[in-house]
Length: 336
Image 1: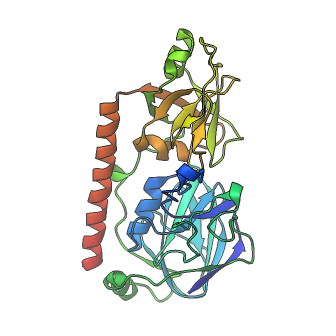
Image 2 (image 1 turned 90 degrees about the horizontal axis):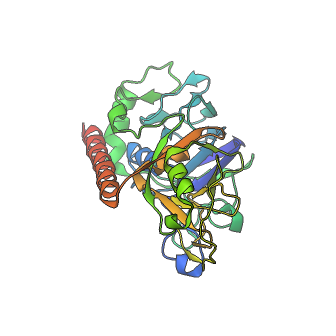
Image 3 (image 1 turned 90 degrees about the vertical axis):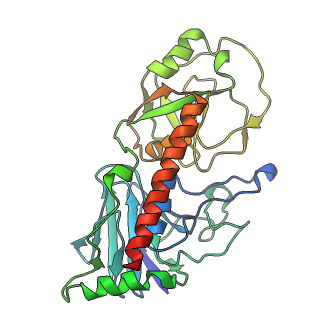
């Protein structure tokens, strides 16, 4: 099975759950920016949660399906159509062979995930199919999609056959696609907002900042800059200043680390973050809130709310429990 790319979109890459186990050699993790949308999309099409899918940014692709497929689009509120018919999001959709999927700009959010039953079957590089653009690693020849590309798709799991049978049974002959009557409940989704409030742990070097700047970090408003990318979200606001003049040896950083470069404007490291950094670490965006920042468009306003490590762990546990609940609900739907 394969998918032909007629329009690549603004920035569409292949991402699985990430390239782990090689950070000690300086190899970045990559993986999806919105981890919730990626995991939910795979669950909806009967894939294991880490399977390779397409990540779309601001403008999606135009794709032609050579064979019938089960797909799901999650994440930002993208406008998608199959042969001109509007496509619902956050639910499994059966796409007949020869159909054309058009994904236009989102009404809300920044990034979408297109999951396909069987996953995208590009070669594994260091145990991952994720694309790392700066190094030309993984994905489809290490780059974003281009017009004329052909995407290989793996074999789908037999467990989704009852669902497919049910969709085909209820599908109108004139319909451009088939789907189900249910979707992921809003109560299980992250609280995507145009101007998110991100919960933040104090960073190891927060005390290096002047007291006024420490207060500004947790009370001020920052604007997401157009220079932001998969490596980091650049924020602008009242510049934060260091009260201590000190050299920092390169130290470990991770998804969500808030670095403070010399210009005083913080950077939140994202999926393609480097493995170490030499800027003071003012904070750490909690894992449960990273999908909210991933959906931020340039120009959106961001505020930080201080939380404790225990609160961050409890919020992560709650997010994981929602995903487990979602997984169980979807499995039950597949068996009906």
